[in-house]
Length: 449
Image (cartoon, rainbow, N blue to C red; front, side, top):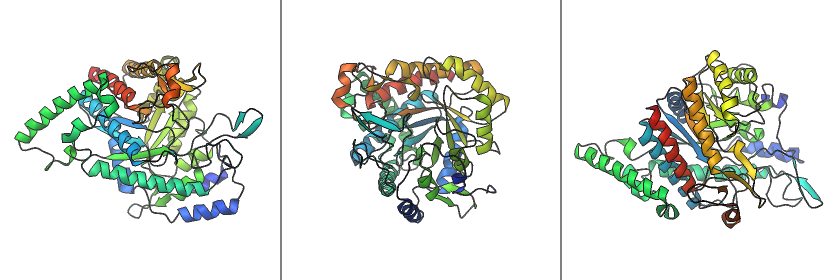
């Protein structure tokens, strides 16, 4: 256990992107209540994830981290969770079949309710209000009352996260992830597409392999991995009163764990070495993701990594790179060189979403598929040049048939955005685009083999 650290020690540091609660007494009452709530994950599961991530650092595994930009209270439905799970499973099968290595499935689910914003203020006409910060903090409705931070919303976020995690466990261990059912994973609106056809062909090949294995006596009745899967959850460690309330001592090891998620990450806006978020994450034993953007200073990043992972433990740090399609080949290599020079053990993961956001002519915030793909291609290209392993992908996506990102085989255009634009924050890939991207990533993984 780290000396001079506690779940509350972050309060002595500068905490960026935190809401200002008017009723501090109510906030304290809520956080006290949350400390007594059951955990969403267990320390043993977190250690399993860390072991799986360690394999992703040296080419013996690949990380697929995917899910919603920001979960919402209004769109909470079991079908949404099921469909996102199905698409992530499809993507994992595609990537694993291509690479020949296990894919670590990590959802941006069951806790992704808070978001940092570029501006603390949103203005419509003459009315100026606090920005929407995620359903855990305030409401997306544009009114004074809706935008007031309310600590009660943390309880609602926990309850929804618990329900989501319960359903994900049922899917992962209750037969839904059985490879013998792979033919049923395709969503209806994807089946008729080129991506759906490609996945069906892949599923047929896998089914043939399973039939052969069954004839040899190897089947889902005697090999757990054919009928079940490990599925982990993650979210950004942003709202620190919430995170600290779910940080508990593991009785078997005596170490601190955040039991609200298997993995947490620090955003590009909260990566300050002397800030509250780094302080908080430096004391917990969970794997920690660190967003690495265009403004990242190499020496500062090395210090942050050493602060969070002083023992240079494998599987502890995931560097989530979000440079932008036009910047990555110039800005990324020096960062890899700095990490290599200091012999730091990290998993390199590509986030091709966040630095490729733009405003369409129609006024909608969007992302263009070809730019997302371009950053992914450059990510693999740079790692090949540097002799390092491209260990993962980090995506904002949904299983729903949304029209939020432009392009792809569906050829979603500016005029299509308004038809099914449902996100509460950033634009997400839909199921069809996600599967298309998985096949494109798979082609790169085949070349590495």
